[in-house]
Length: 371
Image (cartoon, rainbow, N blue to C red; front, top):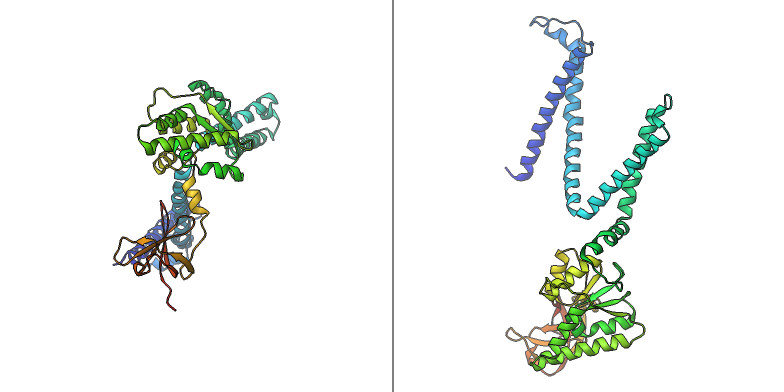
């Protein structure tokens, strides 16, 4: 028996069980409330039973059990399952803030009832007390949910900064961006900043600047050039009046890794991390830190290419597979051309066959256009 048929069979069995259960309950309720008809059970008078109130109660209870109780329990089960799925998506921070708002609302209602002696009002005192408690409890809960970010920022300002003794007046909680070493060396951040698409201050912690200086002083030529490029990019950003760059002198001495320091600083200040480091991106997201990845932005703004479109490219090298040729678009997107090796060095027209989106970027597969 297949899964679908088994489920249908189980539902039918459960309906029958609920029907029997409803009938038994209804039969007993008739006797409890004194509505039962006079009836003495015997095999000779069994036909009279179908004319008694007990029979109609059993019939009604069985119908309600078969249809209504099963329907209500099924809906309750769906609600519980849906609630569980939604509950998993709720962060602990939101739960704590919501419960805190509910408690504050309840306490506020109790204080109002006490000050104005609401329970002592004749007749309407108790209903009015319940109404005030329910109203203020709901208001506290609703306000806490809708103002979650503001409350979290306020609590953070009161406790988190004092606890960690952070003195970073340059960081405006949640609006600024902390730059890591990789995104500074990459250099594209300066071009993006000039467009005005990213707002807020750009924060460079002292430990990131030290890492950049170490790279610039490296004995390896490639690393040294990358470090110097990063310092040049920083200098250009500082000299641009439209870009607000702040270097903060704060460090976590107990943490050795620069990436770990960045994540911790972002957690404490609720600022976003600007990076193009894939590993840092994933680690930060796992710890609840908002990340802006330059590579993801670059992939998002690349022109959309659909299968069947025609484009002109130049085959510049051989592909990994036999007979393949490789070309590139102006934005660096790789195009793998089937049977393209014979056109090596030539400008040709190709038809797009498929597109592959990977973490590293977009790859286009095509074949030469035949006239």
